[in-house]
Length: 417
Image 1: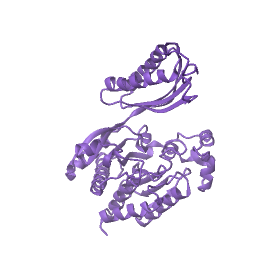
Image 2: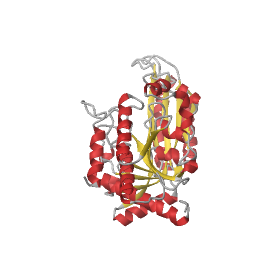
Image 3: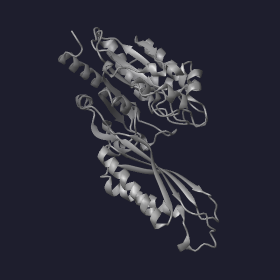
Image 4: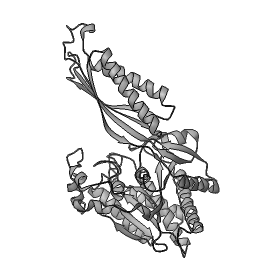
């Protein structure tokens, strides 16, 4: 079987794990199906001649040894999915990484630079996003393991035990960032920029930071038929006024880069004949510029206070989550761009609005990402799809970039003598 055929066969085999009769794929983190997918990957990596181990949080690490004591070039992504998600998200990053290292192992008799293919656990956030990659970077404590639970009430500790893992040992998954020379991740775009541009490959410049806010408007639950309009303290009117102006603010001040979303709206008492007395909003702002992100967060808070004053209601504002933007390493971006040029694959630079395992590792390790187009921009749904020639192009670019980075390490002496 040729290389491209082997990659497709791997994809088809993995796609059989977690496929639902009603449509979509479900491999929730640490569940039996997710464990089956990771066990399958371990076997395929062994068949490729790689050494394989799972760390204490269940991350699968397949390794091609190089010269002793040298940092590794790592590639990978994740195998878990959202419920009724797609077959491509995460999976093609792991499989393309395996393809690259498998090809290098077969073609090179004395490969000097250690290579790793990593399948991270719980990227999708069943127990809080990026459990596996955060644990590898030393960012998950025992206390956090005990606190985390899924929306169905399952605790992370119980899920780990059911997967054959020791919850107390999770912090032992931490690795020294100096073990890595670089980390590369291939992923579907999960948007429509590449498809609209007609370009096969995206080289990620940065992963957007996030500001998530909770805003509560507090008014009075007056009778809808007897309370004059100018005497109402309508919490929903304030929330609606804010939401409209929030969108306009992100468009006008976000410089085409920012994204703003009001994704949670809870109205009380939620009755047709009662003026809403309380509205809770959950919103987020994303941007690759930390300065602009902070400015937009401050502007959003100002809009909320102005809407509350106009509608004679009270407002409380709090930040519930913050993440700084993560720049992708220029050395890795250059390797990916150079690989695309050398292979004659058209590529463009773009930012990632979604976070990825590369964003977690990229805070401590030189990291880079290559995107492939998503049909219709769809993701996290059964309709998620990437045309197979684009998957193959992305895999070729990934492999070439790994080879080029290794060559640079050898030339600079970083891989040892």
